[in-house]
Amino acid sequence: MRYVFKTTYDRDIDLHQHGWSRAKVAVLAGLMIVLPFLVGEYYLAEATNTLIWALAGMGLMIAVGHTGQVSLGHAAFLAIGAYANSALMNVGVPFLISFPLAGLITGLFGAVIAIPAVRMSGIYLAIATLAVFVIVEEMVILLEPITGGVGGIMAPSIQFFGISFDRYGALENFYWLCLAIVILVTWGYANLMRSPTGRSFLAVRDSEVSARALGINVTRTKSLAFGLSTGVTGLAGALMGHYIGFYNYELFSIFISINLLLVVTIGGLGFIQGAFLGAILITAVPQVIAILRDGLNANFGINLGSIPGLDTMIFAAILILFIIFEPAGLYGRWLKIRTWFDIFPLARRDMFRRQKSYLKTERMK
Image (cartoon, rainbow, N blue to C red):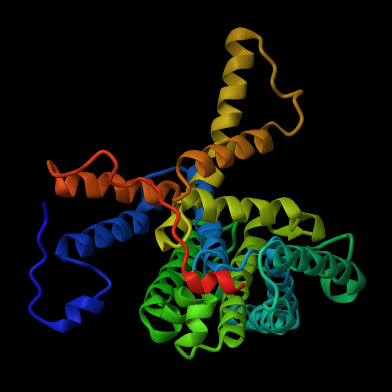
C-alpha cells in the first residue's frame, strides 16, 4: 500500500502524485525518443501513425470524454485541418506557421458550428455532427482549386531550418516532429483539466443542471470545449495528411469517425491515457489480423481474405465486449488492477460493482 506524504498544498495540483509517477513518464518519453534507433522503418511508421491517432483521440476526448458531447463527424475536422495546412503551405506559408493556423482554422470552424449544435444533446447532437461531416465532404469537392476536388491533393514536404521532415524521405525526423507535437498537446491538455475551465468541462459532463446552479455558462462551456476539440483534431488531420502524402476526401470517411469513437471508448472515456491506449489498439489490431490471416492461409489453407469487412466486424465485437464487461475501457481496467494491488489485502470482491445513482435535479429534464 502506497502512502503519499504531502508537505505543501502545491502537491494537490501537481500533475504527478509522487516521484515514481514522474520517473515512469520520463522513462517512457526517453524510450519514445530513442525508438528510431531500436526498430525498423516499418514499425517506426506504425508508431508514427499511432501518435497521430492518439492526437486525434485527445481531440475527441475533450468533447466526448470530458464534456459529454457525442460526435460522429470528427473526420470532417481531420479533413479541414489537412486541407487547410496543405493549402497554406502551397501558397508559401512555412509549416511552423501553417500548422498552428490549420488547428486555429479548424477550431474556429468547430466553435461556430457548436453555437447552435451544443444546444442539442445525445443522439440529436450526434446526428448534427454527422450532418456537418456530409457538408464538409461536399465542400471539399466544390472547392476544387484549393482541395483538388475528387482528384485529391499532394501534401507538401515539411522543411525548416534546413532540415527535412518528409514522411518518406526522412521518417525519423517526421516521427520526432509528431512526438514533440503530441508531448506538447498532452502537457497542455493535462494542465487544462486542472484549470477552472477544465473543471467546468467536467461539471457540465456530470450534470448540466448542477453546473448552471454553480454559475457555469453551459452553452459557452460546451462551445469552448467543442472548439478546442476540433482544433486539436485539426492538428492531427494536418499530420495525417503529411503521413499519407497524397489524399482526397475519401480518406476522411465516416469510418474514421467511428474509429475515433472506438479510440476514446475502448481506451477509456475521461482519461487522457485512454486516448493513447485506444490509439495503440486501433493501429495494432489490423496488423494482428493481417498476420493471423496470412498464417491461417499459409499453414491451414484457410483464406479469410475473401470475407469483406472482417476488420470492422472484429472492431465491433471488441467494442460490444467492452461496453458490456468494461465500460471504463482499458485504462479503467488498469486503474482497478492497480487499486487492487495498492490496497491488498483489504481489497473486496464487490469493490468496483457498478451502481446506478441519479441526482434529483436531473429528473427535472
